[in-house]
Amino acid sequence: MGSQVGRPGVLTQCSLEEATELKLGMLGHTCYAETISVYGTEPVFTDGDDTPWSKGFLASSYASRGLKMRFTSGSGSEVQMGYAEGKSMLYLEARCIYITKAAAYRVCKTVPSAASACRLRCFRHSRGAGGKPDLFVAGSGVRLQ
Image (cartoon, rainbow, N blue to C red; front, side, top):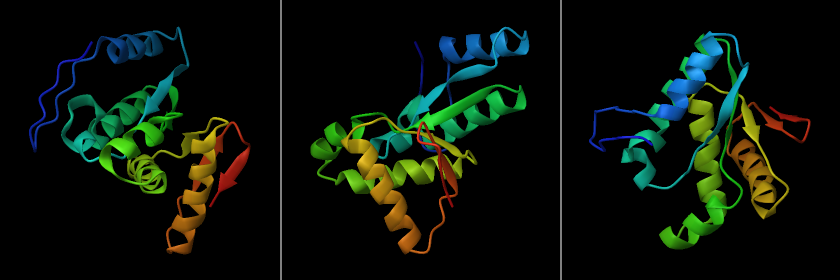
């Protein structure tokens, strides 16, 4: 659906889905936009609409129009991408959590899977390293500060 250019310093995003959700929200037809997926892999940082900058821009667009949304790292993306890149699930999940935090968003969606267990371990490790994610884990009723 989108048309992107992966160049350093350039942020372009042309997406029909996001534009439609913004229009519906401004018209008052919906109050929830979408769940935005983030990934912790290296190519994502220059890959068009999956960059942390475009995700943050999209989140601020929704928030400025009063639309609710949330971030997720996906249910199995860490498993598949971790093997392909030779990285651990914990490493990729930590990057996803900090991408969410960098976008100034505080809700992270979890799913009942091995990746969820990885996410909770990641929260524990990031706190032990002196970081405070300060995120609410949707679907679990848990607020991690």
